[in-house]
Image 1 (cartoon, rainbow, N blue to C red):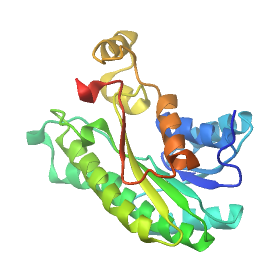
Image 2 (tube, one colour; image 1 turned 180 degrees about the vertical axis):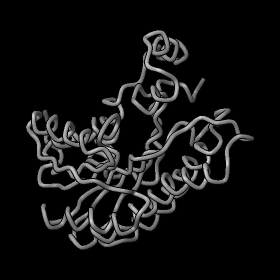
Image 3 (cartoon, rainbow, N blue to C red; image 1 turned 135 degrees about the vertical axis):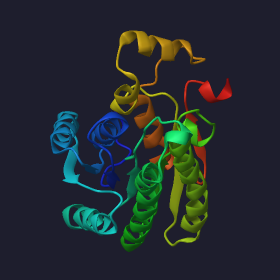
Image 4 (spheres, rainbow, N blue to C red; image 1 turned 135 degrees about the horizontal axis):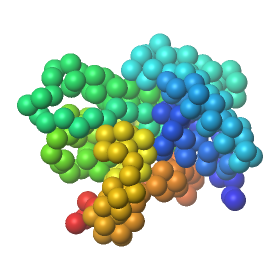
Length: 255
């Protein structure tokens, strides 16, 4: 395996399962010093064990992405433990399915604060930390196919993921003016077989087969596919890519 991230420190939020875990493992295997964050300490320990088994360096820290003081603590940890910050993967988020007329103001505030404000706070903290290193950096904000197209019953989620896409473009313009520059891109997964999906719809093989059949490539999305895409956006291979929306959905958005 190539080691595209030797001596680079990357924070991955929501790294206790799913896309975040797969990303933390891949980045660590490719040489990154990973700060994996989340709310589930047991899940975080499993991520660290898997990353270390892949030959990497990974440290778990509990993290509430909607709190500014928590972001300051995580960035300080990255700087004290590993000497600086190269990149951030804003992956943590909240998802629920609820009809618009049943979605309360509290529901909307809760998902907005997590998905949008959490992303904003992370990018702002990362910009400052990367600037202190004097070296270029990169940020990937995980949005969703539902930030590009509508989905009945998930209006609040679609609103937040669309906001992340727009915010990413504006942040990319500001990052390009920084010295050193920081590239900022958004990833838009389709249906990915993770606990976020199975907790809402179930985890039966019949359901997985139905999702695959409804996807042009006739396959279910896996967290590892998203990790590959995130690693590309963070890497020097994407040196000319910023402000982009990378959709990785098996063709669902094109159908």
